[in-house]
Image (cartoon, rainbow, N blue to C red; front, side, top):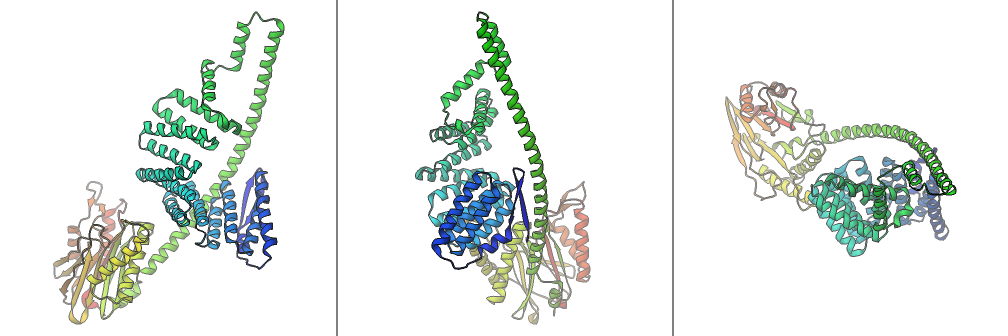
Length: 616
């Protein structure tokens, strides 16, 4: 059982995550009326304790309410209580625990409650944004939008559209961010979602600023400010004042920048100032400008100097007021200084905790990568399996990162020996995910559906992969280049089809090259059936299947810095064709490393070699 500890106001409270989950999965039968009313009372009590700063008691009340609602199988209220608890933990910056709570909420809340699932996923959007994981933020925001649409909840749809816009903004996809900002604004205006409307307009202004359109950004922010003032929206006005202060500074409007900075300080200092209107603030700013920002001491001296005709009582009264103001200023300074020191101490403690959490996340990420590597290795045949099918062979496999978009595949089916080398879009995680999809499609076409000819196999793989990717979007850029051959020993024939990638047959100093069709497995522009080639084989022929990573590698020393090239690779292959395949693999690997030297590897490398007469 793992314990998580939080600090607030120099006191500690604890949550045991295992206790939460065990209480939620408990489905004991109980009288509905008694426990239902008790659960509602506990939720109200939790809100009261949180407002009083009693964090531990508030969390305890919420856990008890979650347990009661789940006993009664009131899924909606149990999930909503989890949302409230996760939001409270989010405010305390314990993002890992927020993720765990959301996962628990999603497990007990099925698709009937699409709105609740959308709200749970929005918490994951928030934690991804805070961590800086913007790609995952976009994925979760689009998923929450899908659930909100499923629930036909216009208020939630407007909020989720704004989440998607912010994710695109973080990824510097500004045009997409503008589209979703406008959609959120339109729906918010239509259904009167005031807070979301103001925030969507402000986000639109920020995107305009990032595009260098300062005039448009100022116009949008000023219009939004008038709207927020009319609705007395304090939090939104603080955000707008901060933005206008920055944007006016960039445009050189120093007076307006100073005014908004003053306004930001007033609004942030006391919530009671949220009802101030623009005329009052402008008046205060004019007074400050006329005073020329002089100190209280200088202003009091001028008053005494210019009012020398006052009688003694009036002068004493003015001095008394000045002394009182000065004393009050000293007291306020002392209080603020103590608060500052307290905040610094707390900041150090938070920094230490975050350092620990960061190290923990790094360790977890390393574990995830190792696990992903094992999964990817599982889709490719082992050395023993390859040797049992192809006796004399080599496999040169060098991923660019820990995970690879390239993969190789060997299989015996229907009297034919199949060998493939494939290159999927992307590297690392994205490439590895695509390779899993494509390898699964290859197994399905050959093993399950018993398709035998390489061109028909590639046509079927294209259908399977396209259908899989089209479930999530109407357009995609993912693809796969592949070289696939089928060896038929009885007739000494090689049947081959390729998508972009080639196959080479080296025979007594001559290199026969079959070039793949000029289309990937997923071709967005047009779909054409893949062509098939047949080559008669003789004992001793060397067959090579490869992706483009080897020939495209830059290197050759600091003086050249050019690609290895296809021509150079062909010459190297012909120079070693008489050697055993294991020796050829070692020579090719050493040549690649010698060429690359200290340069970064630019792509995954995959190359297979087979000596035909050694086939089983």
